[in-house]
Length: 391
Image (cartoon, rainbow, N blue to C red; front, side, top):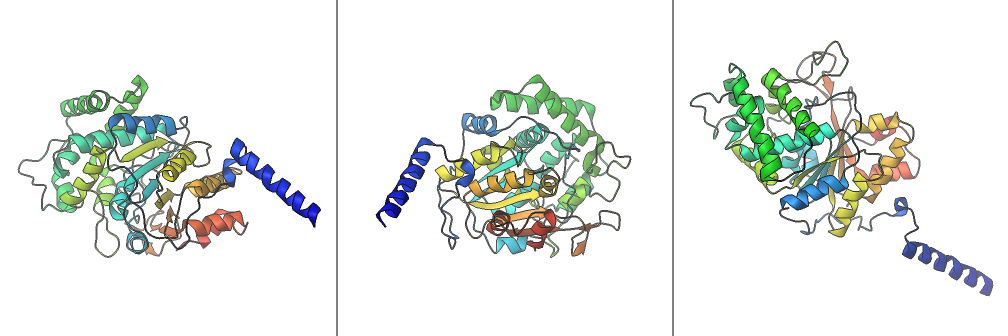
């Protein structure tokens, strides 16, 4: 008995030494959170200054990665479908993590986080979000925002307050792009980011911002998602920007940031307070998600929603990347309400905009802890298993 106690004391002492020495791998840690906890403490900043914002962008980001598409806008026509159900689960004031371009604004509006991190493997996505940031901050209202986004003069007499998203985009349907306006618009964006905010953007960064705005300028509100190298280039039933902005949750409510003036102003205010932070990061990487997790832990914050789109599917196709991703997610402080939102083509329960190849679309959700625990206990080891845990 004495020998057993001595051996046990030796093991405990050794484990304590490793913890104090920092030798325990990060993946062994899991935030200590009451499983029944659903409240969210008000511990996050209400605003970041420009230096704090840019420091997070630079220090949390990883090197630029590759994806097969520029992904300048969402191709998920049913992205609002899950909102009513998830809103029943979570409370405002947490942390939102998402991927991709403008669809994040819809989820941020719906779930009301205190701060949001947009994590995407492409630096181009981070730069697109900086472009959006500038356009939000420079615009006087929704109509002005649409004018700047597509570099088209605002129709005379077009009000913004009281105008539906459908009426707003109909008003711009016959407006032609203006090259002179495009150049002045781009100059205003670059000046706002580089001089007003003081963000350190390279010449290549500025060229990439020009590339993004050029796509919106050339295609206008009919811009749609495209696959690089594909003959179809977005003609397979992909929703247009206009269709995404006029979509609803299936019950007639439009949660989008251009649906009403109030919804636009809420995202505009978050942008002006530097609370939507775009990062360059690999979900399976060793830096970005872990840095976000540490930031949250230091402030006793909790994850509200993690929107993954279909990135999990790709991770399961890339060796052990899926394992690394879920280990990273384990570092994010969660509670019982924290939820994944994912996109699963062909798994839908309602049809999209037309009967083309991409008509069956679905947003699915699941509790974060359910998925992480299923992976940890090896009950799930493929994407089908993840979808099987989703509703």
